[in-house]
Image (tube, rainbow, N blue to C red; front, side, top):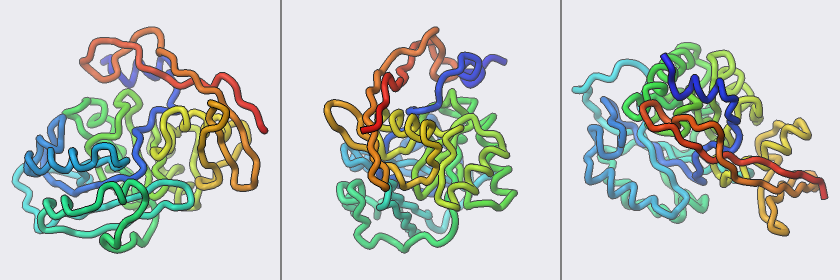
Amino acid sequence: MITCTTLSRELTEPLAATAATATTWLLIEQAGPWGAKALTESHLDAGLGRALDAACGGTGVRIALIRRPGRHADSMPMAGHEVIVAHTRPGRSWVRRSTVADPAELLDLDFGALGDGEHGGFGTAHVGGPIALVCTNGRRDRCCALLGRPLAAELAAAGHSEVWEVTHLGGHRFSPTMLVLPYGYAYGRLTGEAAKEVLAATAAGHTVPEWSRGRSCWDRPGQAAEQAVRLLTGETSADELTIGRAEGLVEVRHRDGRRWLAEVAERASEPPRPESCGKTPGTPSRMDVVSLREV
């Protein structure tokens, strides 16, 4: 069976700079089945899903539904909805969590403040190791179900981390994909062993560039530049690098004072390939680092 993941891998499409962009993630537990547009196609009230999505617009907050790995009976009752809010900027990352009886309560949140990294005392601080979010929504793309669900189940059974299935991380053709909190790095084309390596590294405060799609708090040029510096220097500590702009280029700053300037070009991926199973082949954009120099 030819899938979008098979073609992407065969065409050696780069993983770097393909992470969904968000400074802050708002994750709402919703059991049961998910549709392709899960916020309005699940047991979550569709009107509420639209209102929450609108409230996140332009704030840097990205919203998704989560559920525990395993069977997802359509009639599964819920006494409450666990909510995880995570800010992912280097040196300022945090994870807060709470349980709400009605997700409509979340409309009272200050989404602009959340996007800026101010949690306003929401819930309580997360205590424990990394949180793994594996994309498993087969209604968006069959690869996410065929590859993501077994990975989520394997990680949950291994007990290395807190594991959730999530509705959408973007980049179906890089399945199985996983976002790891608190740092917000996305990963793709993971095997079970690779995912366990990522979780162990995250627990120690590091990232694994080999499977990294980028840190979600950066835009795509920033993700590309950060990855290039990591490959150049071998730096894996998650919070050592920050991104800015200087001289019309992407500036990568190390905590020790070193700086690099990267020229990043957006180009089309050739030859055409489907970005998702069943879609017409296209030329998704890619971010190439044209030059990189230390200053």
